[in-house]
Length: 127
Image (cartoon, rainbow, N blue to C red):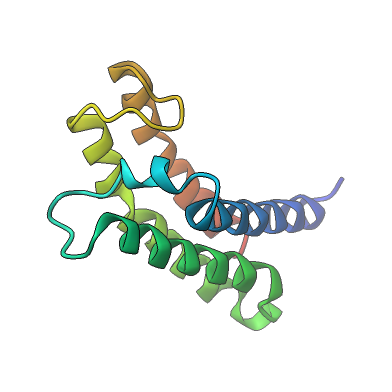
């Protein structure tokens, strides 16, 4: 398998993951995502989850459907999205909120280290 094929698979995988997560925000994982919303966000937790779900669906669709000339830009925007949601992951850790099976300090801490990998995935699969 050549590097272009791997990159394409990674790009489509990232897009599918974002779309699935976005659907989860709106349906089956709505309560779980609320555990990640920091208290300082000026919206209701459920509204924040719904809006972020819509953004994730749009972002995943853009990653999959963007013309070649816009792939890099879309990847950078996706990386920005992953950076923007990091405070929610940190809040879940800091306030010991259980969600998504992250029911221990060690699991919640390990989740924090996944965020840089998502940024890397977004950038490298679209550059």
